[in-house]
Structure formats: C-alpha cells, structure tokens
Image 1 (spheres, rainbow, N blue to C red):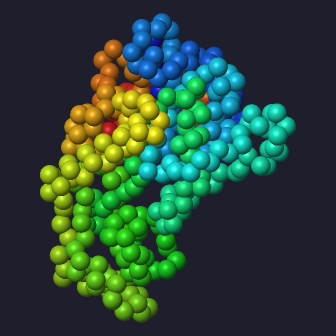
Image 2: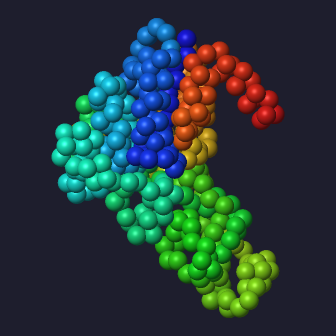
Image 3: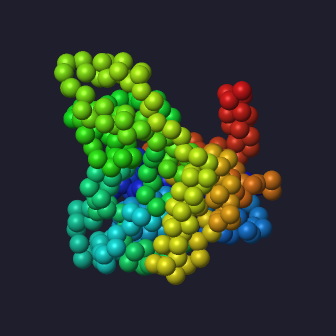
Length: 345
C-alpha cells in the first residue's frame, strides 16, 4: 500500500497565491484523511503501519504555519513536519496571535495577518534582510506538540551555475537573483542562469566582467552593445570541486546545527531548496542526514532510497489537491510514473 509525503509552504487566509487557502487547507486535510491515515513523518518512514499512509510537510518556515496551519492541525489531532530555512528565522521573541486567539475572541480575523507571495518574501529577504513573514524561534518552540523539524538550508539562496547571461539590471527589472552573488547591485549587473546554492559547483563571474558591466555607458540599446563587448572577455570560472564541497558542507551542517541549538532537537531530515541537487551535493548531504527529500513526485515503498525520497505537492487550489490525493492513493500513481518516465526518454 502506498506511503505518500505531501508538501506545501504556506496557508493563505483567503485565496491561495502559491499554496492553499485556509478553507481549502482544511478541506484537503479531510480529503487526505478519507484516503489515507495521516501519521507523523517518522512513523511513515520507520513504521510498519498497514493501509495507505500519508504525512504532511511544510518547507521554509513562514509565519502562517504558526498562525493558520498549526491550530488547524492541532484541533484535528494531526502531526506535521517542517523543513526549516534556519537563516531566515527571526531571532526576536515574537509570538503572533493565531487562530486559537481568534476562536477565543481575543483578536479579529484581520489581525492575524495576510501573507504575501513567496517570491516577494525572497525579494525582501535578499534585498533588505527582511524576515517579517518568517517564524521566530519562540513560535517554533511552541509548535513542537504538533510539528517535528528538519533542515532546508540556511538562506534558500541561489548562485550562478553557468556563464549564460539572462539579462542585465536596468533599474526596472529587479529580481532577487541579482543579489545572489557579488553583493552590490548596480546598473548593468548581469543575471546568470542560477540554481540553489546547494546545487553543486557554481560559476564565479570575473572581477573584470563585473567592472565592465558597471562602467559600460548606459545609452539607448546598451544591453545589446554590452553583450557584443563581452564576447571579448573571459566571463569567469567554475568553482573547483573541493571549493564547492566545502561551501555546501558548511551550509548543510550550519543549517541543522542552528536548529538543534535553538530548539534542542536532533535533526536528521533534509529537503532540497527548489528541489535542486547534483550527485556531488547529494553525496555530501548523505553524510549528515538520514532522510533526504526531493521534489520528485512518487510514493515511498519497500525499495525507497532514504537519501532520495519523493514528495507530492498539494498545489494551490482544491481541485489540484483532489487530483493529486486521488492519484497517489490508488494504483493510478503507477500510470503517472510510467507517463513521466516516457516523457523523459
């Protein structure tokens, strides 16, 4: 019988932007309960329970996990697992009101907060160090009766992985990836093809390239002229494998260590930010974590590789979630796997 790990990031009070609305989240939990027995993640991974088993997981550590998801899960008697981006967690003692306070009449619903998109959170974090929409360590400690915790890296950042230049910063096309390397933002700064900082060897732009991009005259059509000029330049170099290994190991170890220090729990689960990894980074992660999750969809069976486990996203609307719950609670998932495999050939 299938074991399925579902995941999402946020629960929105109204319409889902990246994930489910509060109303849909509650309905989806009931839907999953009708097809599976929802169990704690470790019970699913290590137990021998009969029937369809499912676990609920969250990534990153957004404040709505405490405000909306935690009370709903607790009231229903359900457990969940949160993969924490530990470098984004607030260091203050913030404890925001949640649905329990609303149900008790202590606050109005509007006082619970309205999350913005995950993209906006990325942007504000990398541009300003803004952590307002992330949990505090105090809130996380109060969630331990419902949630267990795993690691999700330190910053959820990206680094260039190829010399391919996608665009240049022109003052109007800001994207948080412009801040993923080199610190300073300037007119003309190139945006490279990028992946998670935990993906593998990164591409390091040369100082000569960045200097030229910064000082190049920004006249009409300057981007095209700059691209032509760059054909004469060595754009940079790739990290040596030893450099990449050291950098990735430092973040992987730092991520779990911070969680263990702050919450006093043992961390042996990890999920890949953006789902990005390579054999190089996978090998490093396997030295520090027992259970490692990908974003590849599938069920966990007796042949599962614990260092490359599948998960299933619930989507951002009720109908998408319905389709995925039904697909992965029946033999339909075998058809899904067959179709996916044929598409990749």
